[in-house]
Amino acid sequence: FFIADTNSDSSPDIVAIVPREKNLSNALAVLKEGEWSKPLNTTLTYKGVNYIIAPLFKALNLSLSNFKVYRSLTRPFEASPLWFSDRNLAWRLWNEVVVKTGFITDGDYYGLTNKWFDEDTYMETVHYTNMFFMEFTRWLIKNTDWNLLMTYTSIVDNVYHQFLGLIDPRMPYYNPSTAPKYMAYIKEAIKWADEFVQMLISEVDLSNTAIIVVSDHGQWPVAKLIYVNNILEQAGFLKRSGGQILLNETIAWYNGYNQVFVNLKDREQGGIVDPSQYDSVVNQVMAVLSSVRDPDTGEPVFSVVMKKSEAKALGLFGDRVGDIIISTKPGYAPYGGFSPTGNPFVNATPLSTITGNHQDLPYYPELWAVFGAVGAGIGHGVLGLIQSTSIAPTVTALLGIDPPLNSIGTPLPILKPITITHTQVSVVTATERVEITLERATTQTLTTTQTTTQTTTTTLQATTTLTTTQPVTTTVYETTSLALTSLAALILAIAILVLIFRKK
Image (tube, rainbow, N blue to C red; front, side, top):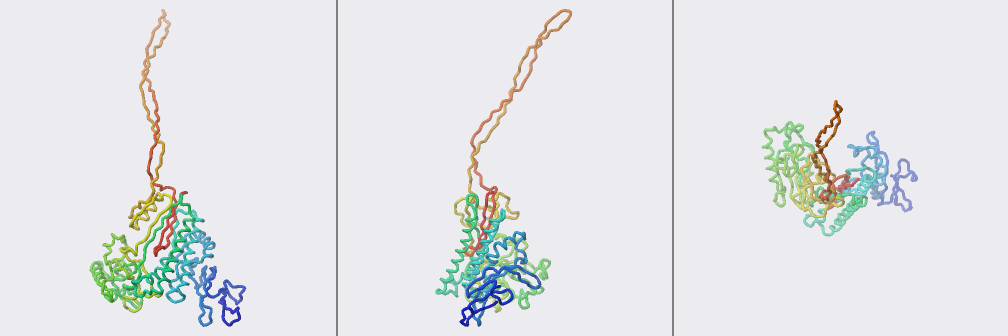
């Protein structure tokens, strides 16, 4: 970086990003305070490996005493794991989209919570995130022969995590004087996400295209974080050294996503719980978790503590599901890792921790998702509450293909019936027996001449065909020759999936 005082007032007023030498003519970007650069498509060398990146920069503060320049997320082209399966296609997209928008895929909450910048700059990273996903998706729609295109934008989820509690009077940190500012941030993110969906609608023809918008969750405001591993540690189920769990001494641990795992022999690496003790351990851990109460209110904090075998009704089953499923009540957020204070309960702190969360079971309206559909083959109406497991079979029904192998849902009743009238041709064949008698005269020459007559009877078959036509009306559902695009946007703090079915 090269800062300069171009006004000769003894205060730097620009910062130049220069590759090597201090030569402004070679600057990749020249920024005044508060300005953003365009994406700088360049190569970064890290541990002897070259990575192609396209970060953006913002001049936060140009004073000599508090100089700050922010660099956005880098997201290298060669990031591991790879974000593409077709390198040539990805390289085209990089050069036609990423070099124009950058590769920011989330609002930078890390920079916000670590006080690198203020809320306005955070919202700018949120906006850049939406711009990337919009143009990424637009490019794929126009430049690929897609049957199923799935994309996503995270922006409303981002701002809900950071600001949702700040607009809720029930939260202990609520401030009525600042709440309107945070409400404005949330509304702005919703508007940007809406622009994303509008872009999709404008890029397709709804006369031969169907669009489905679906999300994966809502959010509720958070007053307290609950570090479940600290609860297990205090009950003697978990041992650690610093922040590392000692598996050879741990009976059970919380792995995030509302699931506690028993350290079972022959299943977990380093497992110490004998299978004969499994049920006993599960019951003991459940008893501890069920007894946890908020130290300030004395009320239980978990609304659900259940065994894996009991959770199948909720759609939770299989080898990757934890042995114990938990879900908190509204106002709490279960956390992995360990509490910085050792206390399992940590108060949510605005702009330092999350103030909104969504991973608990959706018994509460705050966590409900959304679903909407429009376009070719889609009827009109109101569905009410639906199951998320119905989404995949609905998509396959619109595509006219079999549902996924392990799908457990049924298609939603959204397919519009189509009346088709055609002419049915019926052919009736009749066979008739006909007897014909012929008389034949023959002359034979003998010693004397005489004439004899022979009679021959022949049976023939006469076939006649009768053809009739009649109109036939059939009700079917438009399911054939459809292409599908899916957008996962986040509107109202929920990831949105937009499925576009296009006739080809």
